[in-house]
Image 1 (tube, one colour):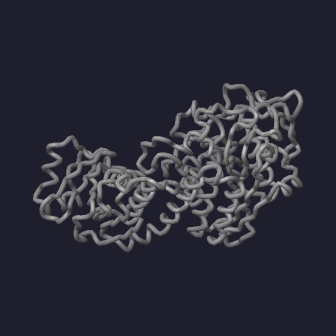
Image 2 (cartoon, helix red, strand yellow; image 1 turned 30 degrees about the horizontal axis):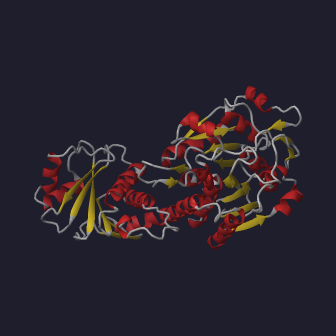
Image 3 (cartoon, one colour; image 1 turned 60 degrees about the vertical axis):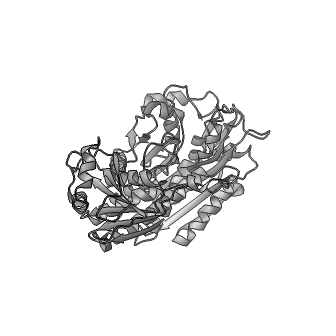
Length: 494
């Protein structure tokens, strides 16, 4: 999408859709009032005969108002003026784009007036995120079905300040799109080696990237991770991504670990065929970590960070691991595999142990589309946060509130440890149905070795078919990229 920032009184265009924000129950003020004056009260008259109060998500289309040369002016509800922050302007701007994207206009003209440069930049981010579309494999779609809007013009009193403010957010939008693309790609295209190859292409941003194959992982004793992939013809990979942005490149890093199951059949414990096609998204955690590393490198973050991706397919061929098998993890702990569809925690067990043994990070945060139980507990808009550290949790929750990527802290009651006791090994990989997301987190905790750690179960939020959130078109969300970028920026960059 072509983006430009222009002065607040730039001329209107008949071929663009002009959009102006209106705050709830405050009538036409600021830029809306100025444009209303130019149209001899046309906007106010339209409001008076419509049920438009300026509530967030409301829009009112005024066609061809005389006096300004615009083909249409879209009034966009921005909610209450009090507390109008980056999240709210992103949402309002995204609603504007969603309303006009297929209406024939080639340009969306956001009329922001005296809005602060940082808020103007956030409005552009909202439009960018709303405009995401994965159409790589569509070959017969009719032109009228495609969005017509391909450019964004932002009229604001300080265009140069807004341009500068948007520079960092532009890289963040690119990073979210990178993560969304990874999640959306079909599994016959994006298998572990291809995922690793795409990650390696990020080296041009200054990232250091290393890929471990099955021989290297076997030498390290990663029996849990390798066990998940032994039924697939695709080779399992472990991607190691480093960003060294601190003044001392050898300073202790932050660490993020992602589950990257590129397709999950459930293995021998085969899933129901209903909805199995969505299991192409089971690498959402690895996609989020990849996007985070992209974002940090794009803005040259002043911190050292390592990202670890466990990339694997869980398939049910004659060599697949069986329920009842016992695997030995890199830590030396043994696991009885009760259910081969509880594979994500096995991937994380070895990836987390490898991370803390090699890099000695300040903390580790893992992201995984791990359990259906967390969806039952929290619904489809909130991800679960499990942690052994209150300070780390508080920082993550603060970043969650600032970005709108919602987390809810869940308990880790020690008495539930017995749920994963095994009669033949140190533990089993799944407990009873009740408390399933908790027992999964307790399993993972056994591989962090006392290091400050947080586990984000993003099963509810990584993929949203039929999304009603304007900044998230139906499908992959890129959940976690913005949250963790904000978390790092606010807490670990001096």
